[in-house]
Length: 150
Image (tube, rainbow, N blue to C red):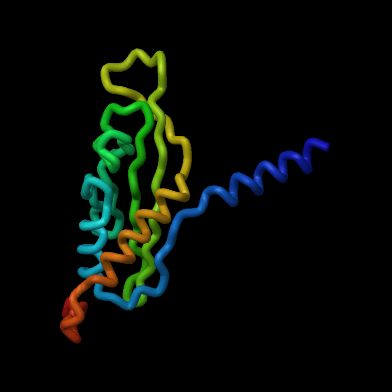
């Protein structure tokens, strides 16, 4: 009786942990990076050393301001992680928005947050914003826009 129940719980958790993906983008890498920079909530907080992983600032939603606001010390906050996969065209862009909750009763100078998993709705919303930014790019692009000699 326990094994089928554990199996169902495992399946439900695996199904909920997916991120939004933009696949087969035959667009220059520099254009994709520009679209990510302009589409992340509150801008880019950090970029990986290889320039393929982007992290947004921590944010939350405000009913008063009707939008996204900074949430460095908020009780619940989100951040987006965008990964560009592929060495050449076509590229795949994986968007993951993670939710964090501030821990209570922790004796620390800075607030301590625990990860609450992937927020699918926000992941899809950020991916749509990136997709819109990519479709609004200028039509006149250089034919050899990605070419690097070395």
